[in-house]
Length: 356
Image (tube, rainbow, N blue to C red; front, side, top):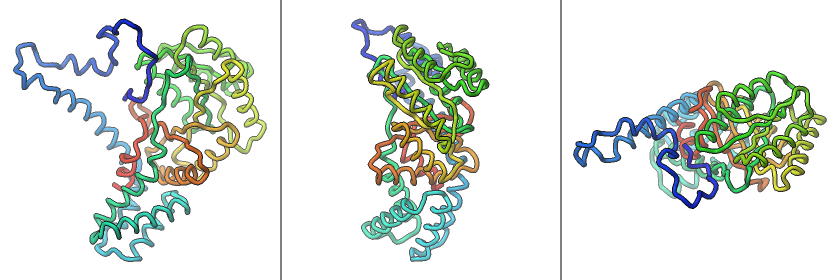
């Protein structure tokens, strides 16, 4: 779970055993007694314990995408590989919000794979489609790196209701559990409830927060970055007000926040993340394009893939990134409200869940 974090250079002396990640503790308490045989002491039980949460996550992901997956899976209920199958698959992908460009690219790639592999049954075609989707999504699969800058400054944007503040809270929890010292900037001064929500996450995660009632968002961000540098924090996360990309005056405010952060720390922000609601369909792609034009995004977090969401929009985003030569990453995807429901994006896992 914490492999995507790059810690700062360790001190000269080796860290004590107690500095190991917290999730290892429950497994340690279940270790066999000292008199156990070498077979009992093998690492296999630990591997099984680690696999259980992962299996649960994959199940929730499949359930979240079952609306999309069900419509695509129906295409493969027949027995013939013919033009009708490809036409039905085209319709299913378009209905899944994959977009015209991504759908055409996937179908062309699939036909090539079917020909090269001399596929003769629809089950093989379905497996080849999973491979094609994985290859399309693979450029989006990249880990979030912290520790190369002190502090690493992350600016988070998104429209109202996308789950931006909740995502920040979950990310803060994971960072804090990985021994990162985090400071939050409540730069969403437009909505009092957002400031209170972020303060609640800060209290829950036992991290510091810089907040001003009714203050200027850029000023709050500036103060937070300076405070993070002075206090030796590893990460500073700035929560910005949710807004629609059509609200040009508010988008200008986001640009101002980014400029002011750079004044506090010249190489910052190091990450500009957009939180996208997976239920918004092709509008999610429009949001990515608009926010990227305004801020120069570095990565995305796709949330709420747990209901009516059509996961094909990630294919549309991947296609756009390829055509526009924008190397964006989908750092995390979320399938629910629980902490463990925010996980790093894995192209192969997502493709399989999309087709189950």
